[in-house]
Length: 592
Image (cartoon, rainbow, N blue to C red):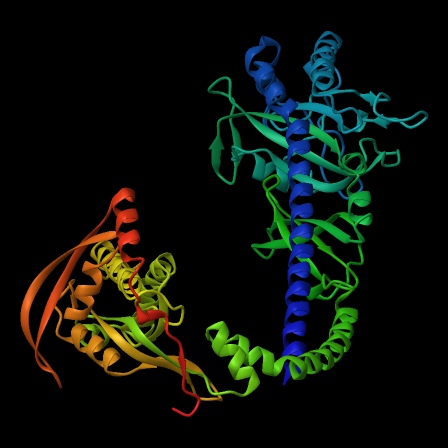
């Protein structure tokens, strides 16, 4: 049983610790994923901020005011014509040569404006191009040939973007059509940036961010699916996402923790042929072959841009701590060793443990250890009984736990009073509480009666103000009697120190015939208290009371006590010094 208990407790502890560690590992992975999302969100916000700045300039500077009218609606009379179609037969670019879009002074002004915006953004290498597209046609952009964001000899040739009609190019028109009615920044990607027809992509992983600019005149209208939108056009930013990933050091952050990750973005594109949205998951960063079991990773949706970004973070071995199996084996071995040691200790200390747990006076304990019968006679001792008035009714209305809690709280305080007045607690039986004065520590009769009476008075005072934690009030009554009695240890298996005799019986009857919150005593106790050397007791006569087995007995109520002056106490002690009180006589009756 010991082995089973230790093993169960040990394994429970190991499993709980392992579960806590696993949870901590999962939480750490989630926190890292969330931190990564926050970083990307903040970085993208910084990269997209120039769009808002550029939009404000377009709305405030006269140089941009009439550009949509000058470019015109695609294929409409008076609008800038298209270049010949590409090899697929698609018209993608307007012929802006010689138009306002090719005006050198206008191009120079935009270059200066965009250069300052780009410089203030402090996103070198990430924000690689700014564009304006009146009537959704790219008119001005900067830089045309970007050498400032790349290491020589690499540069980004953007000449192929000039004149690009974003609403007619089949590869770009979906995003453009989504952008026109939107009030948010719309991001397309990841994609490779090929800004000229005969050059290699300079940016392998990029985002194109577009934001609509409200119309500056009533004539500026973009038609989408039969709906007129009062829009000037777009502000556009090209973002080098690969450089953003490198600067985030996301790979290193996960690698040093032994974690794998995969950052993805989900786009929904409308398919005109099927008239449904096609869902496409784009890999942004991390492991392309992220083949972990679903229990071995966590998945977090990131609050980034207007698309669904997701990051998966995991470990080839999951999040269970590596020490778990070793700890289980160590627990089994430890349980075996501890069980054997515990068994030896239990055998050696069983007898001593049994004796020490019993509440016996030292003299009685020594006799029991020697195998002797422990019985002593006391010529004059004082016994106190109390019980809780209405206990039977209270216990019927309360649960067993509430009853035990009430008794424990009250009698714990009573025990403190017993210790204070140096009386001996004999036992508690249910709601009954019993103490003695002069037993087992012998003393003069008045001294023992005084200790018990002072204890009883303070116990009554305690009950007056006492409330249990549940708010219950306790009402008690007490009885005291003095006289000869016998004390000793009864039983051998579970020995108990107790007292018996007519003195004890009459003390119990004083309690049963007493009144609520009062202490009733017999004549002999009254006389002993009257002779107290240290206190004056406030005692009132109750008169004759019918007592079972004794007929009519004259009894008294103890109301309180006042301590005498030191001088008075000294005089009484000198006068009593010549008396011979038999309270100290010791009689042993081994054969009683």
